[in-house]
Image 1: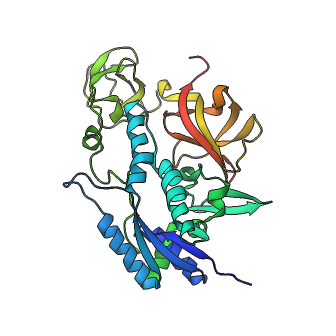
Image 2: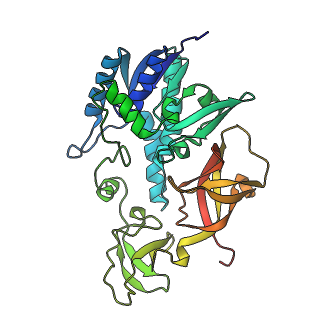
Length: 366
């Protein structure tokens, strides 16, 4: 016998969360929505879509005949996500705030808020899946490989998954949009949000300058030749090609320049020419702060696949236990632009095992 659940859907005003609510309502559940405001815009000249998004979420809720509330979690977001984002950039690393937002806001602050208000489950518009085998909840890739978001959810554990639903994880994006259009939802063709939510469509560098004083320094080639000046290491990431300002320098082979390293101690940005320059590739890395979806670290060494960035194809590797709770990852093939501060996420076929934060990278001959 079907038993309806009390489910609170995180409704952003976008099509994915709207169809999430639509599907659950059609299944007969007691559905309500909650719109989260996670950022207080401090720049009056910068675009802020929060009011438009809230209006879209309310419009969808009215169409579906469900209640929707709004909550301001900006203080929690600033403390647990934004401050970390700033401190990581200040240290010369490249963080991924979407992962921390899922961990600290959507599946902690929002989840706890919803449960305290009587919900039995929460649901989001993530392209991922959850199942339960022998009493253990598993996080699985979304079936649409182009939209799979399990990479951003690797910090979720048993408590979070046991109280969560990802209804669109079985669907392709085009099917989601068609369901929204067929249901008469006005946001069926709304553009997907991109970038970091508190930056939006703004230029990244001017935004970051408001919080961190830039420290300009030299740009050097791998041979030690100074070929330009950078605005501050925080503005660059490994593998970056655009925005270096050194395209027409002497001694150039004509190939594009790429960031291959950041020397924080000397405040030097290191560059090399060619998309496949050897300094861009590393076969080994260390990572800390591991999270395992099952709640327990697997037996080591672990043979699996991993991604070091979103949308990367799965890469074969072996994971070993290192010192001080760090993990050592040995890839079968060298990986391009291994970036400290980013996440490495581990998989066995469609199952997301967990992940960790990249600390360093090397090759055996280094």
